[in-house]
Length: 295
Image (cartoon, rainbow, N blue to C red; front, side, top):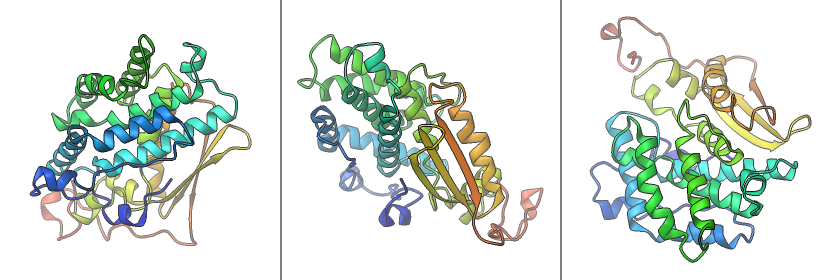
């Protein structure tokens, strides 16, 4: 559940500004274990072959880079996709029924398609604007998902799958109030893209604040079956500043969702001494020495 070595090297995103669109989308391919789920394979194969979807991922990253934000590229999409499928499968294995089963009488593998679709398209609205990007993602994803799932589902099942995926997309915003297990999974998976290196650039560039410091304190995340609850998330930190990520960001994404009560989170600080994340922090920011400027 942590990024690969290559992804860690490009933790801020691929650095796509200044590249031609064709160059930028060339490497944009996502992968995830499908476990023989043919409809999921169809969806993943479709997005990887679709230049429009990959261009949306590129533009989401361009917006992110313009704003000095952390990665919102295809790398982020792939990590969220894999975390989301991991969470869903652990919950289903523990006997928690997704909405596709409980509400629609369909299958668990259909729930995987919904979760994957939500993960793949949750940030495409960033190609338009950061503000309200979750809402912009909806009208882009609606048409495209219908195209990608044509043939995999007939009607009315295709409309149900697309509608549940759209609910997962809008549910990932801070006050999204997801109603379904699938939407809650996408929401939490998005928050769990915080492992080593994923948000370090704001600190390296001198944009220091509680968000960047706490993000830099997260070294590793492991997602396994829990002993007391279906899912156990273990977070290794190098500094207690990471508690902000865990409590204010991750816990906020879990509370009030169908995942609440099914996920346990354990955050620990590794080593005898904490890692120094900056030499000093000053207010006002205008007097900061190079490399420690407040954001």
